[in-house]
Length: 465
Image (cartoon, one colour):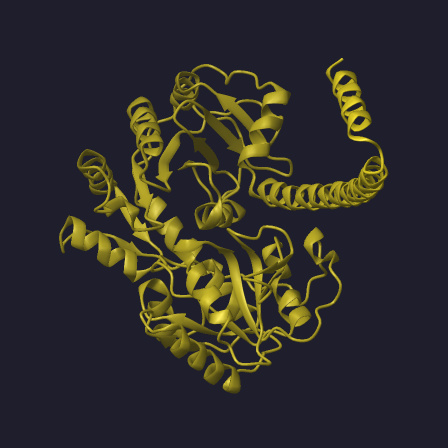
């Protein structure tokens, strides 16, 4: 076990990925003795990091007994070692996380600390009992942290000005300059010219997609927009917003500097969506050499005001005004070969880890207990669990889904061609039938009326038979 880690911390998080998982992965990179518990209502999955992470699906009762007895050494295949559980680190306030912390805490005596990654713990739209339960969970944490003052202030508004929520900004790791592409999405041909405006991430309605689409129709040429990621309307690489926005598709975070150069981007735009609580995409944009234009609210405004590296705009402005602001920002923007110079610079990962280790060290360490070994994990279930919880798999899953959509679109196009050909053949047959019918009618017109009636009756009987 890593000497820095000391007694193990169990990170409790709901499945779903995003910034929460990225934060947990950063902590695990520096604290390999820690473990992760992915919790849903009916299933818990324990992840033990290592060169080959081990995923063990367990019933909650089994895991509670295991944790109470002491966790296994983090090294895959190592025998059970008696290490007390120092603390639970909750990364959310949803019911599954609360239940896991309550049950494991009661069994092991370990306290829980809480990192607030967003402001949904105090969402006024929640049912009253759920909101009260979340606030009680926040209040009951032995320590509480948040990555932005925006979240800290929300916690103090909801729980009182004296509530102790410590600001611990997320650390930043420099990207490897111009790492070669590894994602399948970059198998696209080179872009046809420059896309000066980059929008980074998964862009849905809450991230300002409607405003972005409106902006794309007003942005003066030759400025064009590329989404380095995807939108809720366009998962596959290609075009959206009636051909006005280029969608790149999924990519690995370390590929961003190379993608910025690939598309010729000079400005990272953050559309006027909901206020961000931290936003890793902002750090990634700066470290990829992009200055930013961001809405003046939430953690985006807080961080741009603190570090520089761009400009802010009123999130309530009309699309035409935003287009003018983008045009103005692009006239002054230039792409930096390295990271954007910031004052002060982004916190280093070492700074964040030193603060978190200090917080962990202030918590009481429960005494290790003796007890049972963990239940054996079925390898098939481990693979299934990893497939649904590993963020790298989730990126592959979305990429594979995009590829499947491409294949389905190709099959649909081929079927459409066959259908078009069949319709053309049918149309030709119908036209020929109409011509033959007209000729027969002209011939019948020369026959006596009694003969015409006799032929028509014979045809009627033949059709009825």
